[in-house]
Length: 417
Image (cartoon, rainbow, N blue to C red; front, side):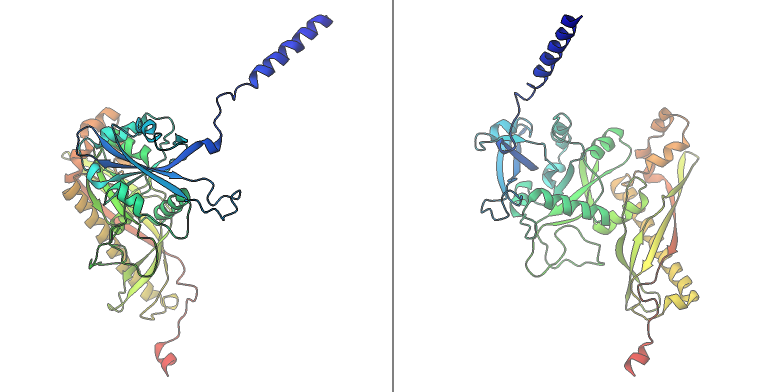
C-alpha cells in the first residue's frame, strides 16, 4: 500500500514538472515591436497596397523610464505589399523586433482606397488574423493614410496608443464620430440591409469654409488658432456593401445617432435658434436616456414607419433673458420651437439618405424585422431596395431638465441702471 502511494506521488511530481515547461516558446516584452495603427493606401499596381505601420515605443512615458527618456515615442514604416498580413515579415527587414498586433487599436484607410470596389477584399484580411481584434476602430482619412500618420503630432499625449484611445472614445461619446468598429463593418456588409458609418479624420485644414452651425462640418474644416495638433476627427464615411459611397458631417452623424437604437450615445452640447430673439442661439445639453420606439406597417407593399425619439434637454444659456424657470408659457413656446426644429432636421436627414445613399445609416432594419413572421419573409421584402420609397414619420418628445445652474436671471434694465 505504501509503495502504491509513493508511486502516485512520483507520478504527480512528474506531471507537475512537465506542466512547468510550457513557456519554452515565450517572447519577452522588450523583444516585440507593438503596432498601434496600420495605414492602408491604394497602389498604382493592381493587387498591391501600401502598408504603413505605426509602432509604439512602450518605454516612453512608462514608470520604468522615469518619464525622462530621449527616445522617440513611435516609429513609422511604410512598404508595398500584397496585403497587411504577409507584410509583417517584410517589415522585419528594417525592424529588429518581432512585429506584434496585440495592441493594435486602429486601422487607418485613405478615402481613395475605401472608394475602390476591391476595398472589401483588402479589409477582410483582418477577419483572418487572430491577433487583430474585431473591436479595432476603422478610420477613413481624406489624405493618404501614410501622410495622416506622419502629420499626426499630439502635444499633450506622447504615447500614440493613448492618444487614439482618448480621442476616439470621447468623439464617440459626444456623437461627433460614429460608435462603430471592424465587427460592425463586417456585420453590416454581410447582412446587406443598412449602411455602415466609419470614423472620418484628416490632418489637412480647409480654409474659408462657410460653417452654418457649430457641428455642421467635416474633419479638416474646423478652424483653430494657437499651437495644437492639426489632426481632426469629425463626421463619418458612409459605406454600402463594403465600399465607401459618401460622407456626412458631424451634425449629420449626431442626427443619425439619435435615430439609432444600437448606439449608446452620451450627452452632447449644441445650440438652437432662440424663438424669442432671432439674433441669438440657445445652448443646450441633449441626452437620449430612453430608447426610440418604432411602429412598422405595410400598405400596398410600401413601408410606413413611425419613429418616436425621446430626448432629455437642459438649457444652458438664456441670451434673450427670458427667465424660463419662472415662466411656464415661455417654456411651452421654447419646447414647441425646439421640437419643430429637431423634427425638421431628422426628417431632412432621412430624406437625404433615401435620395443620396439609397440606404439608412441608423440600423432601421433591426426594429422593423419584428414586423415579419420569418427571416426569409424579411429578406424577400429586400429592405435596401424598399427603404428609398418608405414613408418615415418622426416625432420628437422633449423632456426638460434644469435651466442652468442659476435658473433666475436679473432683468437687463436693472443691470444697466
